[in-house]
Each structure stands twice: as C-alpha cells, then as structure tokens.
Image 1: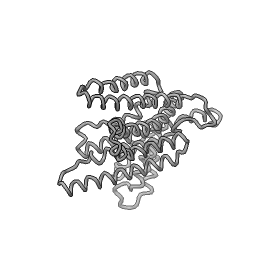
Image 2: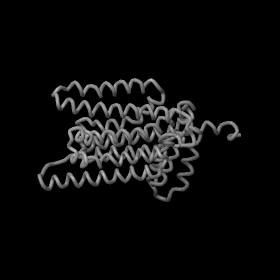
Image 3: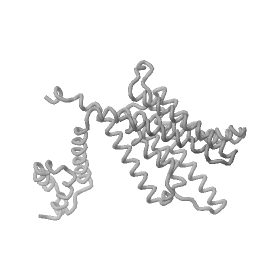
Image 4: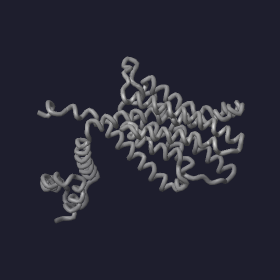
Length: 314
C-alpha cells in the first residue's frame, strides 16, 4: 500500500462503516487513477470532496432518524428563538436608560437609549415580516458593535494605558452576531402573516415568551431601583423568581425545551463566566455556539422532508 492510498483510506473514515464496506475499494481505485505521478498527499479539493460527501451521508441518515413531530417542534422552536433573541437583547439594553429615567436623569437616559434602539427596530421588522431587512439590520449592528468596541478600548488604552481583554470586545459582538445568525437561519422567524392569524405553536409560544421577557424586564428595573434606594438586596430576587417560573413553564412543552436549547449560547454570552477573559476560551464558546445554532437550524429545516416519501421515491 502506497502512502497516498493510506492517506485516502484515512479520509474514508468520514463515511459510515456500511458505505465504506460497499464502496471504499471502488472509490480508492478512482482516486488513485486520477492522481498525478509522484503524488503523495490528497489535494485540498479531494479532501474537501471526501469530507463533504461523508458528512452529507451521515447527516442525511441522522435526519431520517428524526421523527416528523420532532422536526416540527424544532421548526417552531427556532422560529420562536429568532424572535425572542432580539426582543430579549432589546429589553436587556433598555434596562439602563429605563433606570436613569426612573431616577429622572433624562439626559443620561437619552445618551444610553440608542444602544437599545437597533434591537427594537429588528423586533419591529420581524413582526412586520420584513425578514431581509431584519437580517440586514442585525448584521449591520453586529459590524457596528465590533467597530465601536475596538475604537472605545483603543481610545482608553491610548489615554489611560489600561489593558482590555478579548471578552470586552468579543461579548457584545458575539451577542449581536448570534441574534443575526438566528434570524438568518430560522425557517420562519416571527409571528404568522396578517393573512393567517391561526394560533399556531410558533406564534403561541412566541407570545408567551415575549410576555415573560417583559415581566422579567419590568421586575428587574423596579428591583434594581428599589434595591439601590433602600440598600436591601431582596427586591433583586423578584426577577430571579420570575425567570425561574418562566423557565419551569417553558420546560414543560417540547417547543419550549427546544427554544431554550437554541437560546443557551445567547444566555452564556449575556452572563459570561469570568474565565472568558482568555481569548482561546472565548473562541471555544464562539465555536460551540455556532455548532448549537447550526444543528438547531438544520433540524428545523428538515421538517418538510417527510412529505416527500412514498410517491416521490417510486
């Protein structure tokens, strides 16, 4: 066995075992016949073709193993998550200006309000079924967030000599990027169109989750302001109880459970652990978040495959 053949056989590990048993010898023969004299390594194109082919077969079999009801649940859950993500970020960034307004510091409220408005615009566009505009706005805000964070920390370093970590810049960009990715890959984000007001699962769970988000926002603002005025930490526990109640209710439904799984990367980015100051670990979180969102979007888009069964395959 030559070196080239041995390396081809290692790449065949991307394919399922049954497929290798039936077709490996034939594929290796074709690959060796097309190799140039003296070639010792597979070309980049051959490597990508083999890996893509193997993954395609494995994913196709995994999709066939997912039940139609589970696909529908994932379809609804990813659509709900794509609406809840910008809504939650809008309410989260609205806490600071709302707190200033509560204390009648209207100038400070107006200065911090613009950071929340892009997410509010994205939510409005999704609700109006302007998906392309919502996706464009989300990615534009992601780019703007990254540029502004880099400029801000560069100015601080030049003026004060203070150091900044990758998490300082990366967290805001990661949150905005995950929101944009959810909107991009969700099969049908947002509520049903005006012509179809039937209370489907996605719109039903979307309204519930948005309602709980508003409740968490209101109790958080009130709790923070009352706590800062009285010096007691007890009011801050109220939004924690609201979040716990909402999580328990959401976990009771199949769509809710899948929506929470889809939103977990965003939750980690909103409440990052202290070890994320390490750029390598921040990169790991980014890769894992991308993997979770990719799998969720893929499961959501397999919903209609079961409709192409017996008649189309004959």
